[in-house]
Amino acid sequence: MADVLSVRAQVRRAGHGSAFQLDVALEARPGITCVLGPSGAGKSTLLGAVAGLVRPDAGRIALGDRVWFDAARKIDVSTDRRRVAYVFQSLALFPHLDAIGNVTYGMDRALPRPARRDAAEALLHKLGVGHLARRRPRTFSGGEAQRVALARALAMKPAVILLDEPFSALDRELRVSLVMLVRELVDETAVPLLHVTHSHGEARALADRVIRIEHGRVVADGTPAEVLGAPGSRAPRGDEEAEEDEDGQPVRPAADLPDLDGTPMPELLRRR
Image 1 (cartoon, rainbow, N blue to C red):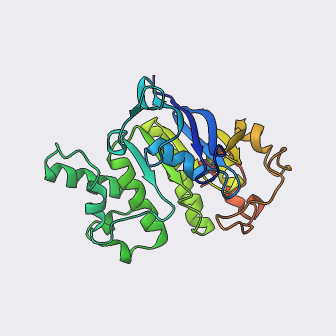
Image 2 (image 1 turned 90 degrees about the vertical axis):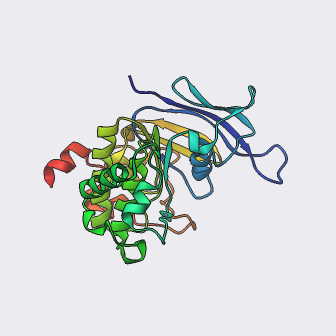
């Protein structure tokens, strides 16, 4: 049975005494958990704590019986030993490396270099960007860069995958394509994936569970229907406000994205 990611984390807000930037307790099972909430709610802080980039002031983070952080027991496993793949909104591809170099970067160095390159090339082809193998990121389109970043994340054989709004700058067609691709890949890898998004339609189509965070606390946790309501309906309490981007600006609602209107993923796949 695959491991469950368990997170209890308190992160104090700098310069505000006992005020918390994040104070959550949640679980993420193998599959996709979408994390929603307004700008500044603590979503990226949550991902940072799981990855080991943010050190909580209190709490415990574990994947199954592997404890990554425990404030009481003074356990804090380093980021490189957690096997967490983190795809940032900016993607953070290495500009001086070609696609093969980016994908092999996080692979096990015990593998011979030719084996790493062969595995990277196979993964790029699987994601539809094999033609980019010898090209550098400055020549990639937005969708190509997303696929290379996903290939790099998967190449390290992660125990947990974190996505921090990687699709927000893409147009509708690319978002649909990559949402479908992520769903397929997670079904294959059977690991917990936390996906931060502002798109309710994306969450309805992609998520097994949805967690909503406001002011650093979990205010809703359940299936997409339980947290967001049925497609086309008004959002439940706590979701009435318009979706916002990271600058607090309104974004187009899910109804404007017909292929991400909350249609369950199997049906979406059949349509295409």
